[in-house]
Length: 459
Ligand SMILES: Nc1nc2c(c(=O)[nH]1)N[C@H]1C(S)=C(S)[C@@H](COP(=O)(O)O)O[C@H]1N2
Ligand SMILES: [Mo]
Image 1 (tube, rainbow, N blue to C red):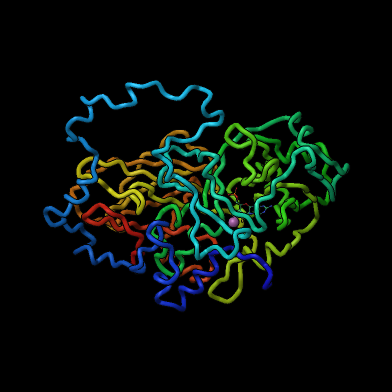
Image 2 (cartoon, rainbow, N blue to C red):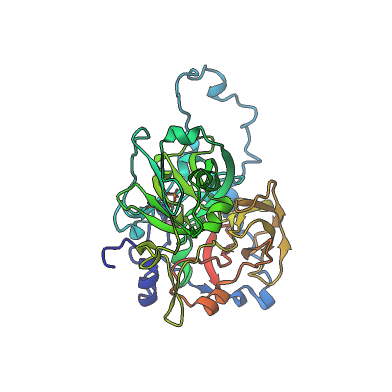
């Protein structure tokens, strides 16, 4: 297994277990949004005063934050005519493919250096702190590759359907483009998302704790349609999906799931897939862990038993406290996170605030999101923004007033199956600390009197 690329989360988790300074050593610089060198520690809710109540900030402590504030009182900003009102701008042909405003150029995918074993087998993270709504723009969807990005020529690419089928078929992209079409929004979450946080609060940024996540509208052909064309034999039970990249990523999917809602996508958010996301074809496996969503998809083999590829034996299993490992843990269980405030999004003024965040469930729809400002003692229900779609990110918001107190803010999702997002303590009890994957614990941000937010674990 030494040559097997691992989800990068494996390394920091292990090192953190043995090295109390792990938070400091080789951690990303503050510029990366990483650990600020203090090391993240378990944070005692009691530290905020009796019964988890809020501690009032000392007077004047909020001033520093207010200095970087909204500019409400900035004197001449509205009466001065800025230069851009006085001169013609560049013409309509200046940028045939548009880019965000230059003032938004910090909204980019980022990686964490100490997670990067090699550039080919690595991951970067979606800047979810900067996003609104539930759709991820194509240019900032996180990437996870095990053998580098394949730059596939669509004219040469083929998709084969073989195995326990009546007719073995080979499709060109143009064949697929002429078949019945479906367009649906789904989230994709890497199984290792939040995997660095098993042993304690580690990365000081929501981009890094929760950014192996994106949500786009996929357009393509359902597996139901493809398999109807090929004709399934009676013993058909499993589907093996194989990628055309150097890693030849292969994973098995139960046939029931394949026929339920899986699809072969050729477009995301209205345009062709990005090369990073598997151009020209990727498998979409709604609600299931990201590694099953094979990119640069070249083959679907129908079988009568699971294949136990190395991706589902050497990797993507969860080590339990008993010493045994769980296998085929497909569903991404309900999870939520507050994106504002967050380490990247401090509170910049006292008074009116709008808390917002994302919730999702691999089981289906989000039913409710609760918010705590006192580390999980009291909860208030957040508002869910329409539309609330199954196996899709759901945006929640909650207005609140802030007077400069320290707070421990948390969100907790409940999905339509009534699954309640667990605390990290509950997760540790059930699963130990060596799982790497599937950490869906409630996230806590400590909001300081300056308005800054810090990643902490509440004990
Ligand atoms: N062919 C192929 N498919 C792949 C991978 C890969 O390395 N090769 N990585 C998988 C993993 S681990 C994840 S989390 C998702 C990431 O999808 P994204 O790069 O679109 O974010 O793709 C999956 N599909
Ligand atoms: Mo992944």
